[in-house]
Image (cartoon, rainbow, N blue to C red):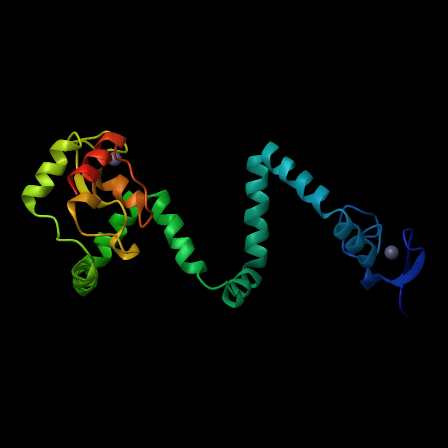
Length: 216
Ligand SMILES: [Zn+2]
Ligand SMILES: [Zn+2]
């Protein structure tokens, strides 16, 4: 015998397996049928998400508890989902770029560790860097020229002002076709340098740039 229950929303008699379980109710079944619930959630998605978000913010500990419980119950599903997830092209690159930007210190630490484990990685990276440098336009930057740039730019990181751990930054990165030339060099500390990444940002003063233009 099939047990039926009436859904007051769509007003139809349906087998009980068409209702979600709800231990808080007398008959252990939710008030409305699955289809009606689904339709309601679909129609009110934004409102419900907003409400859940508010609740989570107001009850961080209980929310964390729920998350943990849900996760332990759905671990297999989550793993399966992660395995089958298809990312748009370039996603991986974008992700790691964001991570690098967010925490350059930590990324350097990761790299140091991986280089220890795999010494060839460093050699490969340096080789690539050298190749880009050789192919780049410009005459290169001698040690004397670098000292001169350092002096003229105030001997400090142009972005954050520190005088620690200074490095040579190519304003237009070599990989973006920038020249390996003193005129394309600005003083940045290493953390600011890696934060800048392969973007073209010129931190040098107007006067400094005007002076370069006059010289050439
Ligand atoms: Zn219904
Ligand atoms: Zn800096």
